Length: 149
Image (cartoon, rainbow, N blue to C red):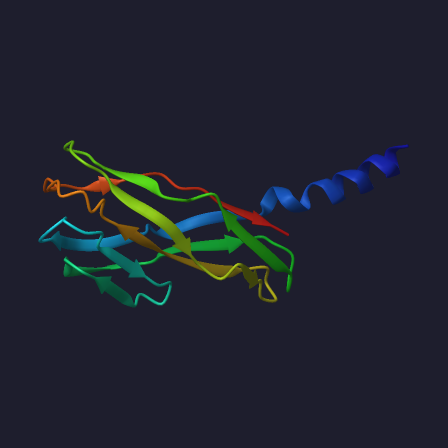
């Protein structure tokens, strides 16, 4: 019975060492919205490439999030998912929120021979397009990404 418990413990502890460490938070940079009469949007790809539409302008470039996966089995596929869909980005000083339409990332990544991988996460945000002006400030939200293997 003792041998069985040791073997079972060895199988159960492999996942205890798997961890995700945020290296960089998703940051869209400093933007200006010159007119909110129509919806404007900004897309930040995991490669840190930006696309802007309508009346949104980039003053200072941001960067994609970077998550370091460590302690996973070697050379396995990790499936990535999220539930973000038009999630509000609230201004810490009040006022109307921006909208985080979606996160952008590779839906599968593969760990290397040491069980390590790097996940880069970009996203798309948009304005309301309702004519209201946005206050200066820092827009913030918390998001969750699910990793399955």
